[in-house]
Length: 288
Image (cartoon, rainbow, N blue to C red; front, side, top):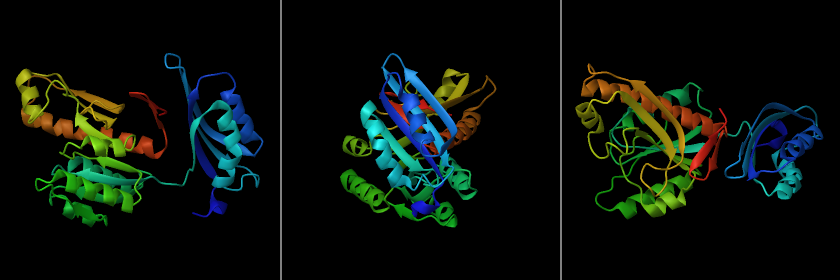
C-alpha cells in the first residue's frame, strides 16, 4: 500500500495504568496535525492495566505515512511500556474462514462481506466437507476441502500452510465442527475466533438444542470467543440471547439459535476488523 494516500489511522494500546497516558497520546497527535475522530479508553483497576483505542485523521502534511508515524510514536510507547499497534484505517484484516456442513454463519459472513458491511478481506474458505463449495465459489471466494480422513496432524498442517500462504491475520471458525489440536491453538493464539451455542457447558456434545428442549430451557444464546486450549472457554468477545417458552419445539430452537449464532459471530468479526477488541487476560475489552 502506498502511504501517500493514507489519511486515517487507528492506534490501539495496552499498558500498565498510570497518569499521563492519554495526555501523551493526545499531545503526540496534536503536534503532528492529527484530528481525533474517536477515542475510547478503559482502566482495569483490578488488573492495573490501561486500554485505549484512538481513530484519527491527518489535517496537513506533517503526517507522512504509517511507518513514519510508527517510528515517531515509538519513544512514547517505550516510555509507558505499551503493547501497541498503529494501522491505517483502510487496511482490512485478512481472514480465513473454516466451516463444516452448517451454512448459516458462513452465508451471513459472505453476504456482509460482499455488501461492504464487513471491513475484511476473505482469503478463502476451508472445510472438512464439500457441502459449502457452491455458495463459497458463487461469491468468488476460493474453497479448500481438507478432509481429516483419520489423519488430523496432516489436515491441520495443510490448514496452517493455507493460513500462512494466504497471509491471513485471523482464522474464523464459522461452525467448524472439529476440535483443534493444542499445538494449532497455540500457533494461532489471539487470532482464532469461534462461535458456539451458549448452552455450553450445560449441554456439551451432540444435539444440544434437542437436549435443551428436553430440559425446557427458557433462553437460547450464542457466544463468540477467542479459541484457547480449554474447549469453548476462551476470552468472550460477544454474546446474545433470545427468550423461548414451552411452545418452542426443538426445531424452533435450532432456527432461533442459528440466527443468533450468525449475528453474534458477525458482530465479533466486525469489531475485530475495526480494531475494537483487546485481550485482557482471560477476558476482552471491546470498544463498541
